[in-house]
Length: 125
Image 1: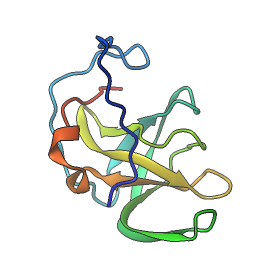
Image 2: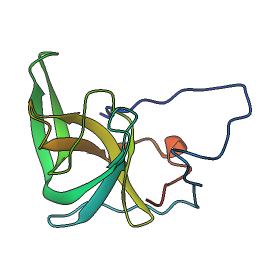
Image 3: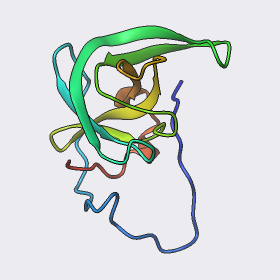
Image 4: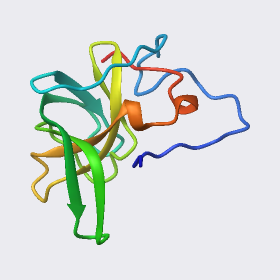
């Protein structure tokens, strides 16, 4: 299961994401203590933190569902950041999923659980 947002377009898109030029992709599995960064549409700036649990099952109260095998981290995120790339250096490790009520605990989908045809670019923050 992947909680990600992707949009298919027929227009010619810009190669800039938040002013950052994507680079060829490398991927990696997140691990405890890994430094990660995320830049979401709502947060509007790059936030960083570290992985505190690489495989946790999370219950989203507002939707009444469990999402399994998410990665728990301590970077700041906000509603509207879902689908944002999560990187470690220039390595893609996942996509933003959700947060706790305060926003100090965030969760992202492990890149290894995202279908490979979605993993074409990564962002170097």
